[in-house]
Length: 78
Image (cartoon, rainbow, N blue to C red):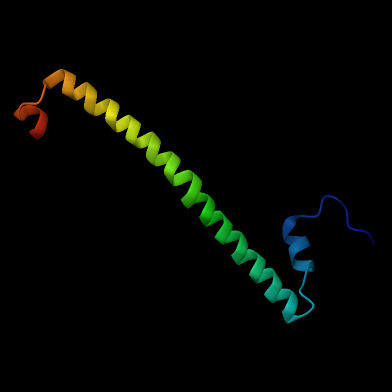
């Protein structure tokens, strides 16, 4: 009996099994490689972008504060 298109994900995953340890090791290796690629994406693309955005926001706030209070004690100590 062919499976219908309305099978739930749990049903499909429970029917799927690994035929050997080699298949399991290959799936585990691909999973770890995907996690490594995701980690590289975060560290190479997202963190610098977020840091640049945060730095620009901070500099705008600092400059507005400088214009408001100047470089006296109130600027340094709040």
